[in-house]
Length: 285
Image (cartoon, rainbow, N blue to C red; front, side):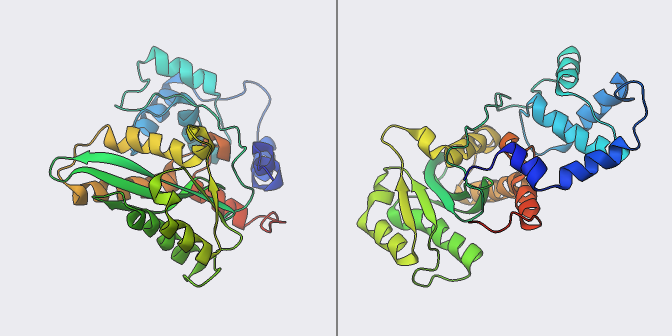
């Protein structure tokens, strides 16, 4: 099943309650009492307070409205975009295009731990040269479950974040512990190796290979890699792999808890998972 935005806003139920509570307090007249001057201050507060770079106007609008929600106020994204342009506040931080291209949802899941994605990405350090980042992401909410960095990109290094993720989500590495979990991988030598495939079979994981020359079929982890590139690798020059690991860890912690995603109805990965866990849709068919 595909989890749509309407499923999140209506099916989970919590948004509708907040909206009705505010509606009862709203008076007739202008749609909002937020002046341009106050809105500009809120926009600057959001931009300066986030640990991210190149945030687009839609996400800025969402962060601003989270602040305004306490007073049952809200503003529209077109107004935020206009003020960003007029006040020269667009993409003031380096990195990122600010674009918002929604995922078509064909490889997302309606529950956690039904499909994970994993892939490797190379990055440069002055002392250690080219190094590798391997991550595991949940296709349900784009949450990074675990990651691993190494100087070489072997099959043994590629499997490390997978086993770490199994321990975090399932609590053991016993035979068949993860069934019926699927793992989306590309056709890289690490994932096509006998070692990797045998280990996945042992854990009860069904491999779901991508199509050749089709990175979009592994789009959940690929989109995260783009964000990681823009927010970390394009900005920092690392002395060695240990320095890189520290920055990557900080970013992933912030990403899971503070990076909002349009396909998640502008919630963060961790917020979206909590909403699901507290909802009546918690059980998957």
